[in-house]
Image 1 (cartoon, rainbow, N blue to C red):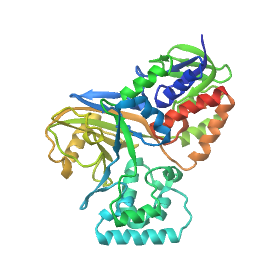
Image 2: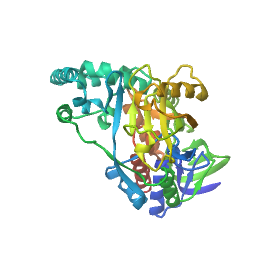
Image 3: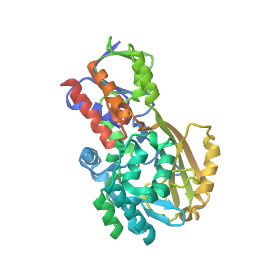
Image 4: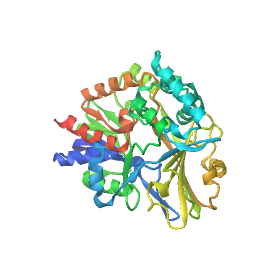
Amino acid sequence: MREVEVLILGAGLAGLGAGVEAQRLGRDSLILEAAPTAGGLCRGITIAGCMFDRYGPKVIVERESSQELVQLLGADASRHELHEVVHLSGLGLIGFPVQRHLVELPPADRETVLKEISIARSEPGEVRNYREWLLSSYGPYLCEKVLFPYEEKKWQMPLSDMDYRWALERPVAVDLKEVLEGAERKLPPSRTYFYPREGNLSGLVGLLAERAGPIRHSSPVTGIDPGGKTVSAGGETYRYEHLISSLPLDKAVGMTAGFDTDLAARTRSLLKWLSVRVHNLVFEGTTPLVGDAVYFPEPSVGFRRVAVLQNLCPALPAQGLTAVSVEVAMGRGERTTPEQELGEVVEQLLTIPQFSTFGPLLESDSVDIAEAYPLQRDGLREHVPLLTRMYQQWDIWHCGRAGTFNYCDMDVAYQQGRRAVRLAVT
């Protein structure tokens, strides 16, 4: 049995952050990773000479929490403004989120939206769920035309069953002052991001892995025993002093010995994931495109987002080729196979005006992400702290999007991993 002072579960950005912090503090640490390589959802792939973040593009949003990652990239860090658009039938491409770019709507539509927003915010009612929050924030016209269909497509569940508080920290929440300014003039992008000048984010993962201490790959965790302070993984048993977990919180509960039965049942019923399928596509020819990402609220279009790699980072596509990543939210009903869906995606993509001149599809890669986004269900924000406090009593600390069941970006997950180690060892 191997004894480790700080045992870390998972080598995504949160787990790597935990490893980096443990090494900085001079602690004996080990990361256990189920996959053959580190990176979690930030692993890269090359298709027909074009570089992709295989699980969909992940950018480093410019803010205080991302400074360390940017500094680590050094001269390879390339700064960009984030240009996102939404495709609306009959209107074409409008700035995303639309509530920040009302000036791009026809005048009559814009006046309707402004009037409804004024009424909604001057006569606030009780807000109990995400649907009611959207309606009270932006009024019926914008909700019915854009927000409801897009959010329902994204989350694949009734918006009335969702907590709204997660959105207060996301781009969907636009301050009234900014809404009004965006109705008068075209606003500059509200966010900037960094991306490697050459290559995809796997380069950043490699730099972090070099600093994160020992990593044991192909070691999926199968059991956690808080009483004995042991973890079973990859056919081995490890004894720890402090345990840092970035595993999906619901899975961690399911494999933790001695967990309260009723609490475990409540967790299984409440903690659910949205799964997505990502199609990474390479087309012949170079096609000028608008937007780093294009969003699709229309129910008639099966995918919800298309990321344009040549705009995200010009070095990603090979010369003479056009590369895009298409994300499809996976509902709970029957699904077509990736191969069947790929044909439907390409067929629909070519009906969109700015994609209609694509050359032949040369090569593709499709991947399913079972645990892409934690579903923001009502009651989640009360239940997760209960679980994490219980684990902390056992000296088990959770971090990352999966470990905290929190819809956070990669830089935040990285900082959560670092913080979890500091809390555990001090």
